[in-house]
Structures are given as C-alpha cells and as structure tokens.
Length: 190
Image 1 (spheres, one colour):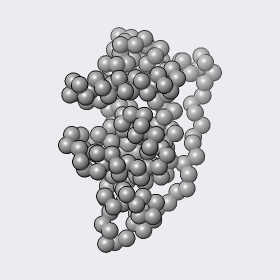
Image 2 (cartoon, one colour):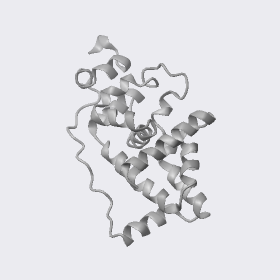
Image 3 (tube, one colour):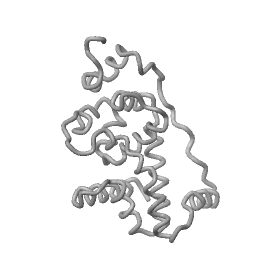
Image 4 (cartoon, helix red, strand yellow):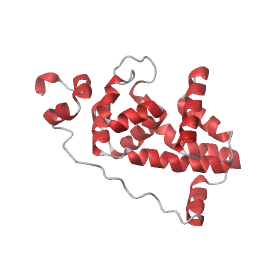
C-alpha cells in the first residue's frame, strides 16, 4: 500500500465517521475490515511510518502545550490523532506543529471531540481490530512479526527527533510556538 492509498483509507474512514456520527477509530476498523488481511497489514506498516515520522521534540512540545502535559503514552496517542486528522492536517503539523493552533478542535472552536480528538488512542488499535475481524481472530501482532520476518524487514530505524528543549520554559515555548502558546500559556508569564 503506497501513501496515496493509505491516505485514501484514512479519508474514507473520516467521511464515513462524519456521515454516520460515529468515532473515527470505529469507522477505520470498518473500512479496513472490508479489505483483505494483507491490506490491513500494509496499512499498519504505513501507519507506523507516519507516526514514526512525527516522533520529534517539536511535535511532542506541541502535544505538551495542547494537552497541558504529555507523557510518552500520550504522545503515541497524539501522533495517532495526527493521522486521524487526515493528510492535510498531518502534513501541516509535520511541517510546523505550531500550525495546529489553526485546527478548530485545538483553537476551541469545535464543539465535538475536544482534546481527545487529537489524543486519539483508539486509532492505534484499529488495524489490529480490523485484522482480527477479517481473519476470524488470528493474532495481529504475530502476523506482523511473521510478515516482517518473511520479508527480511526490520522495524524502521528511529528518526532524528531534532533538538531537545525544555517544554516548561515558557519563553522558549513562546519563541518556538507563538500561536499555540497564545492559546495555552499565560502571556503574563512569558
């Protein structure tokens, strides 16, 4: 599955979720479960690539501002949430996470979802649920391991996280993320 098809699956699930008024992760499970098991495994590979690509200090700092803190588990959910936002928002956030200040949920303009819409834990587990539905319960993680071993694939090397900095340094956060800081930090302390 190439990236175009990956994002097509995401957008199909987003459209389905919006039309049915259901959570994105449930729509993603349904969308993936309508495909062959091999497609679900392909999707998981691309999903891992997409979430690994935004495993960076600047993206984590944006999550820290938006969430009022962000553990490593929460950062995993945040990166899944970036995928759930769709290609356009994912690419904006990847190019410069301060752009997330423009997203209606982040800006507080959206009435549905709140911050859980950005920290979207369920998206991480949608491929597993879809795979187990398609295969009648075959273990997803074992299938991923077998597939990688058969193809001689290794997990992707860790990405360069960029420059580490202190997320609690408000002056630094204002400098790096002026729009997000304006939303989430008290300007009197900067």
